[in-house]
Image 1 (tube, helix red, strand yellow):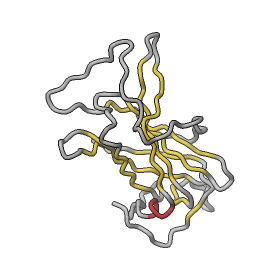
Image 2 (cartoon, one colour; image 1 turned 60 degrees about the vertical axis):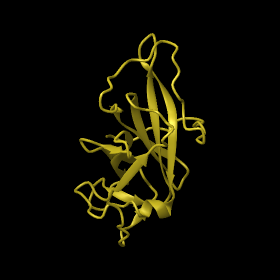
Image 3 (tube, rainbow, N blue to C red; image 1 turned 180 degrees about the horizontal axis):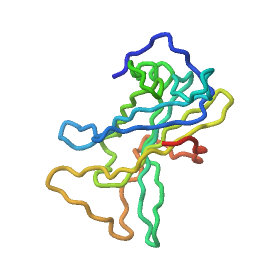
Length: 184
């Protein structure tokens, strides 16, 4: 994974983001507990001269976040930002996947959350975003997952009023969610 620098064109005029997770996206820690995921991400630019929408490499920073989806007593859920990642242009260049697919160029993001963040058994969703050269933020929420529990443990719903750790202590909350765009 990573290491493709090549001479591919980099762009900033992104119109959509597409995320694809492997069947088993979980990255284990030294105890075998899930503490991250791998996701392939395509930043889609406007139609090329051949009329195609394709994934391209981007000029700016890539952002990712993990949200917990906490059930509400009346139904539905409340989204809670737990952790955020920022990949500078230099870091992102090292995450370029060396083999483009039929969908174009892509990045392989390894999103490991801090050890103190307890998301085992929780329902989560990842948000990938990119700020274009004109300042507009393009974002895409990916698939929803339930983080696997360590062997021998079973799922349980939180007791009403029970509080779980919110976000990693060092991470600020997001001020406002970015505009969603694109398709999965």
